[in-house]
Image 1 (cartoon, rainbow, N blue to C red):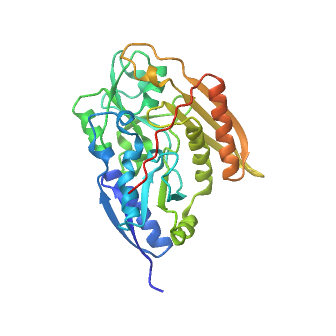
Image 2 (cartoon, one colour):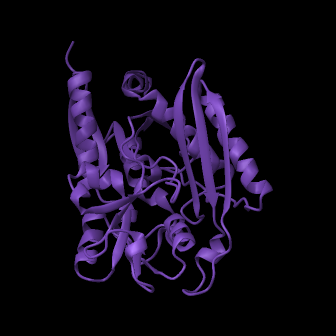
Image 3 (cartoon, helix red, strand yellow):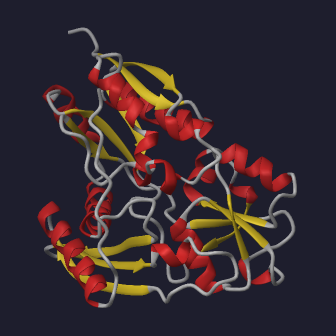
Length: 326
């Protein structure tokens, strides 16, 4: 039987192409498929003068790829899972989640070794409201400035002197061989990661049962269960990039599955968008531990932590409608 031929839709940034190439190699070596890459520029890559929270959210990074799937120009799409909306458009499915890379946030600076070493009033760049509120909770004296663009663009802006430091996902730096740029990493106790951070997801059309069955063999089940719990918190809170929300799991083996600890933090969106120098509203934290055996258990854990957040003052936000790919 001839090898299956598939096309991977991917963004054209260097990191996205690395991720797609990584999946390409897996499909070739483990499934024997013939695989080509289809690089695309998304709206999220094109709109750099406004924050994602003001122009439609992280779904802007995936919509064009879904159109390519819908039109048959590509068979699968590879995403950084933290960029994937909680609910996919009708007709699309998450076929699998791969083993997670380092989920932490990285502190990157040319002159300072850590956040604590920054002088008062130093400028720190980030495009994430989650990072903004967590950074301000650690160092309210800092000036947090917007930072958009792909990873290489952000590093160039740092090197140009526009910022004293920037915060990036450690996974991206590691995947591109740029770990040396990371002066330190924030431990989750200090700065909870975003839901799904460090994990790659593969999306397909729901009617491609052949792909769904084959790709399931590549899934890393512990990672998939962990990110399911994290993403359930976001879904239950109406989470998007316009809501400062973090959720992260740690797990240990258990006789009946995994003993999973899920922690979450929520910040007031209005407070995060307030003028520099004004105090932020206090963050709301929640956590719970449960034995997780399957996706239903993971979702139940996420729902329970979201309920804690709401009980402690976090406000559910109506989610942005998912635009069907067409």
